[in-house]
Length: 175
Image 1 (cartoon, one colour):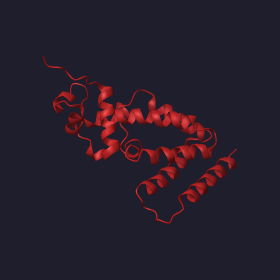
Image 2 (cartoon, rainbow, N blue to C red):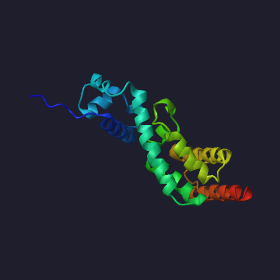
Image 3 (cartoon, one colour):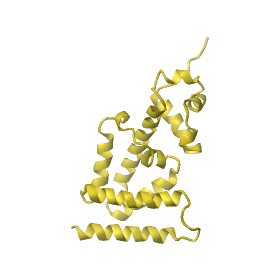
Image 4 (tube, rainbow, N blue to C red):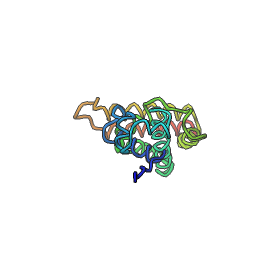
């Protein structure tokens, strides 16, 4: 008697996330995913259309995770910024999938992106423009930090404190 593996979209997303966490997005293929699930690659297509749909499953999961953490991080810009940086540094291989890869909007659950956007815009005082500007600044600095683009002697804590001061001043000036 053959025992059939329990494979579903949840197990596919979990296996894909594990591959990405350890080896990065470039290591994710339908073949490596199937191997991690202990099935043959063609069997994956019973559950997902292609690699992009698998990436969308991971993006959905981690957008939710980020959104919940960002919302719970406290009210102050400092708390939000610390959360953003900490989340990125804790998830160096998942951060690019969520915030640098093409966002598969057409494959995300209905309303998920707007839900997360709403949380971020609220933290930016209700301004979409300020939220985009803030994200660009945070994303840029996180990207530099994750890729080791700053000198070894760069005082990252002081740099982040300066970012926080600038964000707080910008928010205060529009109140």
